[in-house]
Image (cartoon, rainbow, N blue to C red; front, side, top):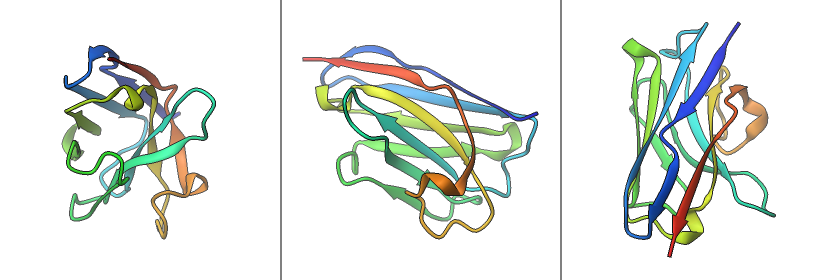
Length: 125
């Protein structure tokens, strides 16, 4: 059974930083793309960042580009999201997802096989 567990969320002031972690068990992630999504209250879930299996390619939403960095440690089946210069509009539940086989569109949720329960990030102004 595959488990995906996010951690590192919390309350931070605007301009601050957080690092989210995503630990996967029951499946090695080394051959799969990984994604971070978020869902703010009253909004649809959206892709924040994604990374290819070998870290050769990364994708970011325009709203976080230059502020967030996705990385991965395949040896430990863990993915990270470093968030800096946080803004109140970054407030959301952040989800980690394990990609399936061929990822033609990192933003397509249906292409991800496993999801975590999410971790809350709240940015105060």
